[in-house]
Image (cartoon, rainbow, N blue to C red; front, side, top):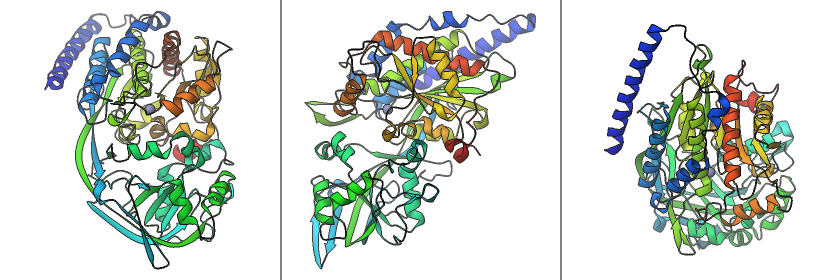
Length: 556
Ligand SMILES: [Zn+2]
């Protein structure tokens, strides 16, 4: 109710502004537009405002901002209210909002079944103790029994001289597969081939009927089974719904999927042509070692689905150049987080202060600067929903943008920027693929930051946040994060960030008690605005580098 009334008010105010503007332009046709100059616009960004946004968004009362739930709606309304105050125009298809239709689904935990059949014997495994299993976005009931074939990473990349599927038949089989992709791949290719979507498409094209997930050493270290099983079933899976009513990225051919823990995997691989540890070491060494495992499995579960909606919040600052204003620089930050879940040290609220109340706060303040002094091109500011459920809000927007896709010249994304110490450098994931590299480096130098190349390509971060939804539509993008260098040489930034990743990332402790170097936050916000100005004021729109992997793959 509140939001509906609010939108009407904003629209009324907007049409009033339009009338005033038309009246003004009518009497003084060639008068130069009065705009605040860029550097004083950047000075409108304040620490106080950033602190206020963060305090509201990461408050326990927002209940972890789960897409589709009350806390996220309140956060979305908060962002819309700030956009309105700052003088942005509503840029959604429902006022400030673009409502994203989602299927929210949960496996009925009682019904989850995983049985190994070997040498005439059946071993029934126990949910959470031995395996986790997610629901199905569409079917109420699933059951599949089939042979299990180990396929390494499940990657087929003949152009890189690598395939886990050479001489391996998976027609009608369940594929047992590790996450990620060979470490010997160039970074871009590794990011592309490590995606679950790429792997599912390959498996389905070869006739696979189910997926058994295996746990790598890295996952074991960063996400131990105790935590994985505590989280199992606590959050819904989600898929966005296409205009024709289909679940996006849904593979009906796959009738079952589960992840087994390392001990179970060791037992199941015993007596097969390869031990689990040999298999895991082969993937670490980027060597295909696929083999049929000689046993069958039954995977079954029932799922309850529900159709919900959750909004992207979209604000617009129109450009000043009559031609270039038809083009858009799109700033994004996901506003959702993981809601309420399993208790850790007595805390059940996953506040997501850094992930991504921080990025959302920076998004609002970037909008403040740009609204105070618009650039030649238009800029869109989007607080995205359901990133944590699989980049859903951004994927929906990229498929159904509120402006023409080819008018979007670049995406600048913020997700979990960490300011745990005084920051000296910025990593612009993905900038090396396009002309954005130079643009970003120059813009951030003005705020005293150095640009550092991706220091952890094994994490494949370029495809793990919302910018990848835009990249898949051929739009050059960067994903900005503070780097590992502190202005204080005594601080080992990599160790500090690594500690956050291990002990606070996606934990209830990612809350307002985390240390924050506010001076760095303000400089980062300023740098972000400068990046926007640099892209939006340039005569030419950003271009993919000649022969770039992502440019060739998605922009042709
Ligand atoms: Zn995030």
